[in-house]
Image (cartoon, rainbow, N blue to C red; front, side, top):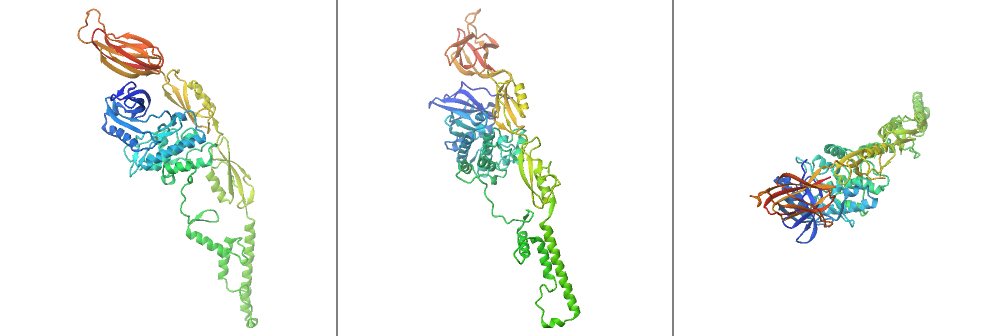
Length: 614
């Protein structure tokens, strides 16, 4: 893998001193520095050498600086200067004394109110960018800086887009997969709601100790943001905050907060936290709880109206509807005929017989209707077997057999969401529409993460597996640590997480020689500072005399002198011998050092490389 040189000790354009490497990304390295002209500490980002050869990437680097300068807000890292030095293009920005949110999260989730406060400040800063037409597009903990006095600042606008009519539909999709919005994963246009989604993921991680989707390739993570619901937040998180996270992480941008300002207001309770309500629905519910259209609602209303009994009783409304319709088409009978007049007394016998038949028919209809209503009033059903079904299957089977499931959840070894018990049990006879209590598995109980920092990797992995957790290992440099020792974990010790969750372990890798800096010169007069992290370091050099030595038998060339800048003491010196690939090793341990070269009697050209071992 390509490794950019550490430029600590260099001075850019005779103005910006680079003191210490603070961090790096795929595009550049960030150093703590000093502006000599204004005598103030600064952060300096220098583009990596191989990107400096690509004009398109240099333009993007400059564009990041321009976007940072465009957004003027106390919550956004301020840009001071931009330049092109021999070491590469660079820009100079405000130095935030503190730590990134990513560093803070390595110690575990934040307290509820701290998470709320950080999220609110983050959203206020994003709101300022949104108001000036800039969408960050890469909101993540590493880009959220927290100063020592608790002020949150957003940096790294390297993949930002102008909000007006922009699209991510290009050969590459910008952003970080763990925090990427669904529209970014699809390559769709970005809006302020894109940053809202990522801010929701960051808030989720502050509350849960890890992002909702952690593992898999970038494509797999993008699909999970597109399709999957995030795991439930810990029980300690208040319902209002859960609702804010849920709305911020809605798959559809239209269902989220419109921008940072609206989300910030929700976080402090100044505005509604619920999604925007839709227009009043024209849907109605039928007797089984299914949705009906407008025509269906009118039909249902008409049914109830027709079914109303003369006495006002609505019992048996659906059954009466058909009976009422039938009654309207029956021939006139004694039940609905006017009182008989004098002329009826001597009517034809066949007429009287027809009337008797009509009367009997009406009585039969009324008797049948009464039997139907009595049977309906006491209708019963058999309780179905619901155990072993997922919630959707329980609801479907219960609906077919006219029972109402009432759900509760208990921890168990069964898969989450599966029915593990029911009351009454299967086969019992109950009245139509009665409730059946169904217990769904909530999965295994949550697990408290053990502390494994300082343990050997194998021992730590065994402890996590025994606790019902999984683990992922990342090898990282471990200055002063033994190889294979756990240097960090996330979530942190004593954090409560779901059974089967993954704990990320940072494990010290095997030490190796790592290049810090290189320099060259003729004769002497050069002094270069650098910081050593390992227990030892070395100088590799080559030297050749220019012309002929003053003395043909013995030549007197330059020499190197190492000094501990923190104590002011000398840690050793050596003579530069003629030839190539010569080395001199120091076992002085970590610290800030300088290496000065002084000339000898004979003129010589030399070059040196300082390497740290960790």
